[in-house]
Image (cartoon, rainbow, N blue to C red; front, side, top):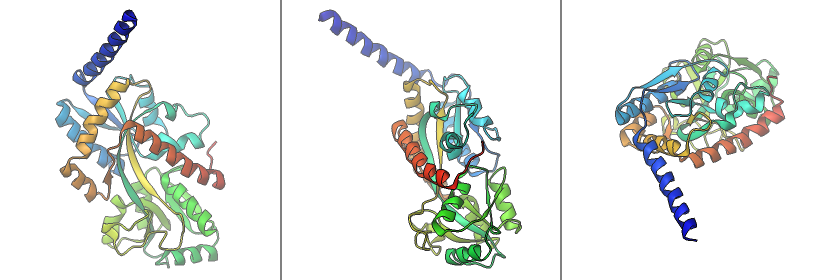
Amino acid sequence: MRNLASLALTAVVVAWAGTVHAQSGYPSQPVRIIVPFPAGSTTDTLTRIVADQLNRKWAVAVIVENVPGLHLGAERVARADPNGHTLLSSPPSPLTINKLLYHDLPYDPDKLMPITLLATGPNVLAVRRELPVNSVKELVAYAKANPGKLTYASQGVGSTAQLSSALLEQKADIKMLHVPYRGALPALNDVIAGHVDMFFDTATTSVPMFRGGQIKIIAVGSTKRIPALAEVPTMEEAGITDFRSITWFALAAPPATPAALIAKINQDTVEILKDPKVADRLHMLQLDPGATSPEETARFFADELKLWGKVIAQAHISVQ
């Protein structure tokens, strides 16, 4: 019994020592945070805020690297050494939704290690100025009078924008035409230019365009109105029941990254997200800090998969 107790104590000491080493020896070189979208996107802006603060906290270079492409960014992180020096900052698709759409992904989203939610924010329903609608009720009526002619933009198949539009189609019993783009900014620019009718966009990029008179915003996708658009109703208030469309951004690590290292990165990132000055900067972007534990982040991923999995199945959305 004494030997067993000694072995158990040794195991605890070794585990504790490993945790201390992971916390005190990291980072030992520059850290790259891969963003799978172009510069200027909400993901990019948010990641640069967090990276700047991590740079100061860790006293090493924290480099944001944009790797746009269908799967390129997530794949690079999935194949990186699990030493915490390559991380992924991403919106939903690469971390969750892609696994529902692609049967031969070059990486396994389930093996990426959740660290924390960086931020969440509402999507808004933006429409071109010349579209003859000023409410969701009028939009639905217009779509029914012009079946298949109302166009909506998205960042591609499986993006939150596409799934939100598919959810609207299901709830309102309408049919629209999908126009995919290579990012949010090109999509929003074409709404502004009048080339596409509508876009479920982040409040971050759409609110300034709305205030500048370049687009109309007729509803917000969150369950409550937002201060920046106090006069704009939620989709629920506009008559679309059980509708929720938010965007979120999470930090993840390569497969097999040690739990102690995940805990270290989580702790430092959460401290940053809870800093009032950082929170204020995120609120200016119409985002709320995430600051979740790895376990909470994993549960959030599972809930999102359940929600959008139903939409994908009912809409028969697939790319392969």
